[in-house]
Length: 632
Ligand code: ADP
Ligand code: ZN
Image 1 (cartoon, rainbow, N blue to C red):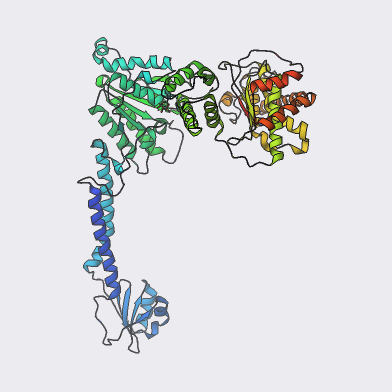
Image 2 (image 1 turned 90 degrees about the vertical axis):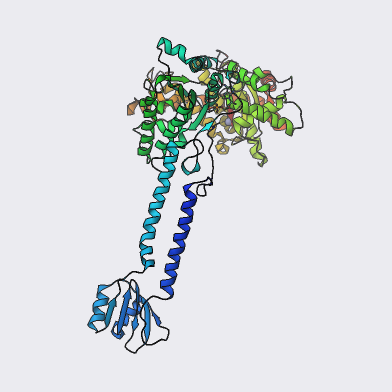
């Protein structure tokens, strides 16, 4: 959750007293009227001598004038207006373009031509108004910038205020759960803010900037607030994205503004969320690069500028610490880095405990199980989980959150909301066999894969059905047999489609299975050194984070071997799965039919069905693997 608050005053009709924009508006309207007036008057009748004939003049177009040049007796030109008489005595009016050839032609025909270069006051206005308006506009912009740089809270460029003071409710470390080591690290900052003199007496160099990095929702903003709350100092928050705008120089002005404000309120915490928006490495070019660089420079200048004992602590937050310009991380700037991990199982339990106090929960809900089933959830996700569960409980007419509400909320967060089913019966049947395939192979490999939590054919998000696993512990690493088993489980859905419906009936529904299997195989081979053909060479350091990253450190030949290996691993996994399914057709069929009848089967139900017919399970190993949701 981002907490930058924007003061969305109307941009043009600023309503503060003495605000230049309303004065600007009045002048603008007045000038506009004047210009319209001039256009009207020159159009309707001009201050020119009229010919003898008082009859209304005829209108000639410019091409008429060119064509009838020999007929023209006199012409008075005033700007683009021309009038005069024709040889037959008729008065005419025309709008002409400046054309020396025309004048020459007229002259050679003996026409008398007079050009009036005198200007009326309205003409002068026509020249000066645009210039004046331009000057006014520039003045208006600069005025805004001055206000931003020197002015206080509430007066800022375009009426937009990038910062916000936290008032009222105090956040403290009690509100932060599950990340104890990070809290510990930040305690010291609180101590410094509280007892500045103690540190000064020893001559300790205190940090000016702290960089909190970690995924969204891990509590960076919350921690920064808690530091301010614990130390009882004001908290100013801004977001990096507020500092880039359409107007060049805006970022610099805004940086100046927030530091001014911080200095006036020191000791305090100045929090800058999404600091990567300003502090990205300078080599990466983008169209507003120069402006951003100036903004970054201004930030560095400000941070270098205040002395250590001012008592301002700047806390930056980012989920892309690797992208930051190294200049930001030098001593005296953001020289303290705290990385906030996603909470582990114990951490998740603590966060759940914290938020479960704020809702009513049925005694049957086992929060330890909820913590088990939420690998990869951030603190914000967990808070959201309980909130969604509470909403679901209300919708279902309950007064307390029941296990089913948690289940529903978790699936919704993981996979998206339930879909109203509009599927053909044969598609539902195929989905049931697909999920039965996953479930069966997973149960066969129960020794090396995570226990099944449930299998369902209720569509959700993009998935038509899914088999969910529930880890016993947080996964740290996987054995090679776990990898092989997981690959077979992933591909078992497609294998079941082929085994039961034939090779010409397989569907595109295995898309995400194939993607996740490929990712795991590629990671094992290029990064984890599990393939003898590649050996323990890290061919792709980036693979753990992004499977699509191109192979680094790899010759073309190696890249080819890698591709071949991935293919071989996946082919083998698919063959394993198919073989198991063929050998146990009846059991798998029963699983599928049960799924069709009940829509959802629990891990225990699946185990009961399979254990009747269980054939030899080939591998054994540790029981701690990953939390996976194999969606169809
Ligand atoms: P970030 O700044 O890292 O994106 P936030 O601090 O905005 O994350 O977290 C959003 C919300 O999630 C917080 O306001 C808080 O309610 C909840 N939250 C996140 N992490 C924790 C945590 N460790 N303990 C308690 N609540 C948390
Ligand atoms: Zn699947």
